[in-house]
Image (cartoon, rainbow, N blue to C red; front, side, top):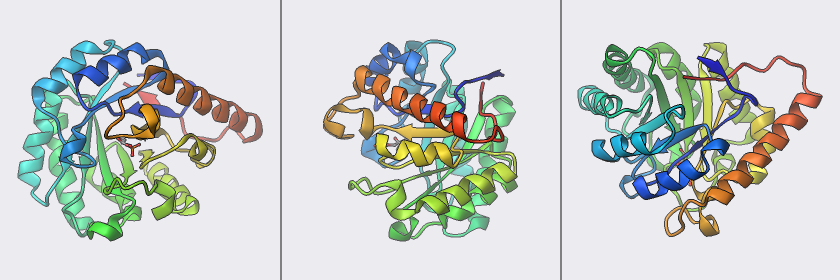
Length: 264
Ligand SMILES: O=C[C@H](O)COP(=O)(O)O
């Protein structure tokens, strides 16, 4: 494991090999390439061969993440899918607990995923993802996700938005609630990852509350359009520069107690 400075990691989500190549051009500005298939949902799963191609396309020292989908409450099905992502070369495995309506269901799913993934690769990081706009889709409360991650043995708790209609993370989970999410994740030794139409303007608060990983797509796509726009290397660089600026400002004013983010 090697320490990354600054502590906030930037996760970028290309929708396929072509965009992953654009991420590779901006590799020095990002930390994790996150393979997903946005037309299958917010955390839509891509094909195993796409994960493999993207793994081959980005520099070997950059971790590749893969989303397993906006999953149903079917622990066996999801565990097998998660193993597929791990076998295909992803070392961050993200699961969207879309069909889980209670924390117990989320724990069932994530325990199965953790076992399937870690049996294959003990160093892989498993990410339990809830949805900031859970109230719109009827899934588990966002603030329950850190506990689901802790009790299942997952490595990180994440929030994204389920419905990509322009509403943003903080529209659904206000900053103080996101701060509580981060606090809960850290209290059990998990990483805290936040996403959901995050814009550069959100980076100040995200840095201040101690977010370990910021996930974006729309903000680094042409025209800010996560569907019609393509990921632009210069927008990735500009976003990273803004992250670094906030990290420096925060480091200059805050006591040095923030948890250390690590990347495998
Ligand atoms: O995991 C990160 C997501 O892909 C975020 O996408 P978005 O910034 O377009 O909401």
